[in-house]
Length: 313
Image (cartoon, rainbow, N blue to C red; front, side):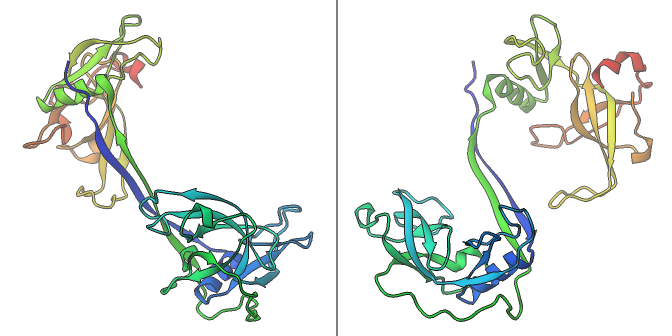
């Protein structure tokens, strides 16, 4: 049995968000070294601020400046910081209730060790040297024994307010396709397509999953399918994807390979997009060194009869 494959995988994309008046004022204030909260209908000052009252659900905009000093309400020690976290050395994650606020703000607390952190300790904001209007404008909190500083009198009105943010969403993990899909990928390296047959319903699943999704029983009987197949359904793509060197419009289709009990998807080429149709017979086109077909093209055969693929729609 071949070794099961595994590889590091990163899913990352920029998340762009527009800001309402409250969040805009809050982040712009951080850029200006000012912390703003919002007063709710019950009189509490909420930091970070929200745009809708948690009690009445009504919109709220009564912005209130609070001090950059506060009290730790609870904390947890982070002995091994990860990539992208506020500090590169061990630190505490702390909930800090700023002076003048009634709720706590979660951020990093720079301390020499867990013995130096306690609930009730006094801290202050350490501002980032370069500030752009983001929560990272607070570099972290640090221990502080002095009196709260004088407030600036900010009301939330600033020049050049921040109206939107872009946050990078990223997930790093190690992916393993498992035994069945490892065999499938290895076969693709030899320009063969291999599925697995369910011992109960006898359907051949491509790509194989190691178990039948209908019967719930394990599958291990390998079956080579294709290489030709039939277009069952398709869509015309009119929006060009970033970093994808394919001109629009083009067609993406579900293709039932001969002998398979499940349609897989692939791009259709070698034919005008408006001539692609259900029942079109196609075959894979490989490029040099590729581990999977680049696209599928018409074989020139007559279209398949609808009854031969209707169960695969």
